[in-house]
Amino acid sequence: MREGMSLQTRRELLEHMLPQYREASTVKKKSKLLDAFTASTGYNRKYAMGLLNHAKVEQSTPQRPRPRHYGPEVQHALFLVWHAANRICAKRLIPFLPTLVEALERHEHLHISEECRRQLLSMSAATADRLLRSQRTRGQRGLSTTRSGTLLKQQIPVRTFEAWEETRPGFLEADLVAHGGADIEGGYLYTLTPTDVATGWTECLPLMHRSQEAVLAAIQRARTLFPFSVLGIDTDNGGEFINEVMVAYCEQEHITFTRGRPYQKRDQCNALAKKWRNCASSGRV
View 1: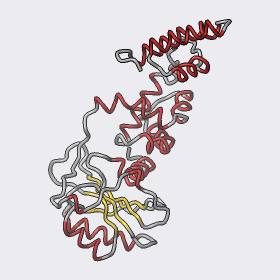
View 2: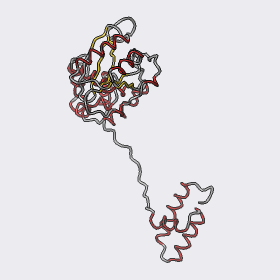
View 3: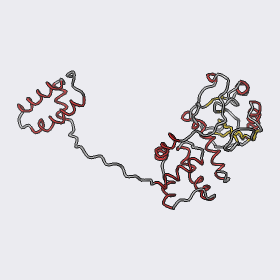
View 4: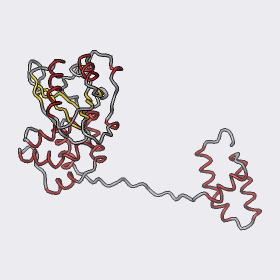
């Protein structure tokens, strides 16, 4: 390969030589063209001959922009539903769109045409994710009451959304919901929502405060409510979960204890999706 010649230049030279080489009527003319090609590119003669004999002649076609399929009305409706669902990932949002749209329309928070509804409900998760990308970059972070635990996180293994492969009941995702509205100052109630990954079974347990002891007591109560044994618990990185009391309890009861990644809500997507589906069906969105 000749030094100083870029790959793009060699490709352009090949495209230029291809018609001449293939239209040459004699072996002598082809041999001269092959000599010139190898001298310019530095290619091995057999390799160069293979390129000239077998390379495809590419015809440049103008790239036309893909027509826009979803108009402003559909995008606005998607953004409204997404914000109502607490900005969950598109993969979890799409299955609950019919329920959310119906609830929002019933309470007159959403007004769309039949064609808009048809397009919205037929949208794929990939398309929704692409349309929501601009909203994620400029949107402000929502209010959060989660505070990192003091326990060394290295002691508790990380489990991501992609790692959930359990098909038998007993592996739970647990989330603590704060009922503080738009203001997280002062005191308010909490709800622990452990959700079984395999079956979707969810229990909602009220808490007066979010202490380690209160959360542990709620988890102990939840174990008596599920119709199967609890084999594993996956939580976020809040101090109410990531603490020595919880680790010791799970070790004593032989329960697998894992945590999600910081600032990655989709690692607890089963608990979050079930929570918003319950809110939509009861008209609380």
